[in-house]
Length: 312
Image 1 (tube, helix red, strand yellow):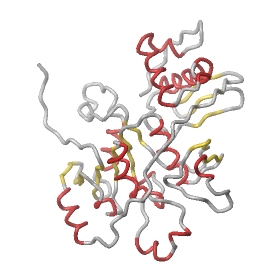
Image 2 (cartoon, helix red, strand yellow):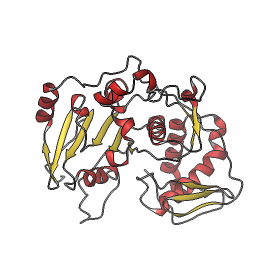
Image 3 (cartoon, one colour):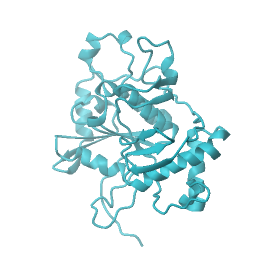
Image 4 (spheres, one colour):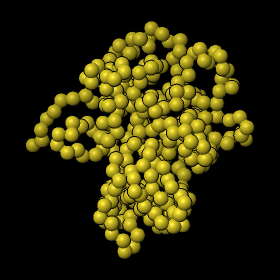
């Protein structure tokens, strides 16, 4: 039989990891975001596990976005046509628009849980306090902060959120579970957080009237016009003079994974994308091929690299 163990389990829904600085909040989240991987004995994270479909999302100033429907979070923007955020494209996205795009892309790929660390999030995307709301009228603010959408995502879409927070209590109202880290030890503080929220309902976030709906886009085929491959975990070449920066994809942990992702994109562009599959269906097809044939399934015909590693 198996070996029993005791520990802390986070339920589906919205969970907060709170605490003072340097008490282990981000350390715990970093362990969770690689909780889908096996660990060597003695690693220290062997029993820290997470859904295989959990995705770490963050703001990424300057990233490229192509045709992403970020309208659940970002309304009409100044100097852009009305409705442009229903298919948002930019070679240089801001913090808030890049984080909105990251969430929608994760949902399109089939994410079951979203992981956030306030240190790498856009503040104006996560919260909007009462004083700022009084200074800047709602009609002049296109951003619907995540605190107003998180409950909808959990209740209507079945997508959980785990958030590291140390500077705001705005999420206490919508949270299902609150953990406080004290000297790297977790404590269940849900009842305390709910009592604090009940004492001050003035700034409780209200859910938007519209439902949270995201699309099911089909990636367009883009066959590389040159060499492909990766020499570092955080980037890969896809054609001549086309370097793809994935340094902010924190769940890539080994060079072989980046190499496998590059090979999979090249294979999918030729064999799967022309079929008009959605992102989720395309990934499922790739997974099925890898299950059946191993990582050789994503390599070009006649090529057998021995240093690929399966990405999550």
